[in-house]
Image (cartoon, rainbow, N blue to C red; front, side):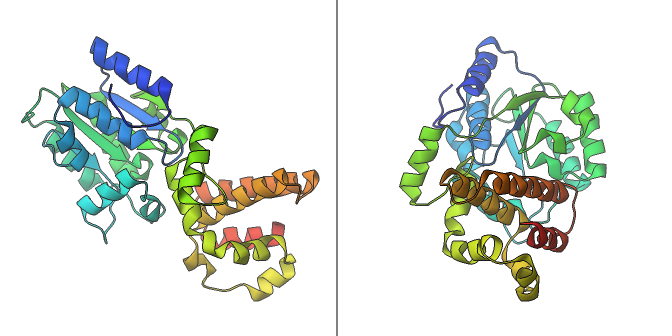
Amino acid sequence: MKTHVKGQEMVKKLLSSMITKRTIPPALLFYGPPGVGKFSLALDFAGEIIGNKKKIERGVHPDTLTIFPDFEDYKYNEIFKMRKSGEYYKLRYSKSIISIDTIREIQNYAYLTPMESTWKMIIIIQAENMNINAADAFLKVLEEPPKNVLFILITPNQHLLSETIISRTLTIRFHPLLPELQQQIIKDLNIKHFGRGIEETLLLREIKDLEEELEKLFFNTPSKERIKNWSEDLENKWRIEFLLLYLWKMLEYKYKNGEIKKDNAYKTFLHLKKAYEYYYANVTAEKILFYLFLKI
């Protein structure tokens, strides 16, 4: 399979084997950190099965459908380009869902006869954003999948999906970028820290200008002063996932450089882990920030 995606060799071999042997399951679940090649490989896989890869890469092939959560302020082609370029992090943490209306759109599309190929492919980005009604409706589609239609669900964490949906898919894990690829990104983007994938690396570059403010706030200011001087617009200024990522990378950097003792680093690690648990349990950003101010 031809692809420009770096790394993910095991995934490439598996997908190439499916193409060669024509053993293509009705549904795949790609999971792993943002920006490590899940969407790009889904498009490349579609190009091998359906053909006319250029149309697929532009998002205009009639036999492929890419579904995004509902971002009201952005048009489809804008979102598609952001997803391909690694800038999707600007949207990823917005409050958005995949509704049952979108699943009905998928159902209608799936049962149409292909126009240019013998296959159709439906890629669902941030599949974990399906609400309960949408997930139930989509499960019914997976239970009786249309012939020659392949679904690819993409998510950073497979456990955010229901077990029943997962059981109907072949799960494929995407790993964080290898160190040499990360180092090349650091060199190309001229940033201090790197993430697990392109999206996180671009995000870290974007917040670079405010590193001093955050480092002072979380590492050099007593907790009582933080609460006293807490700017009320911090929640709006920082989407909570961004903030947690930054603190995680800052902790890693300081520990490796001997700027924080092992015991203190471990305690901070536990607090950040707890904050992530709160985040995935849909605790409000305000409460998570308050917890971080008190504990770190």
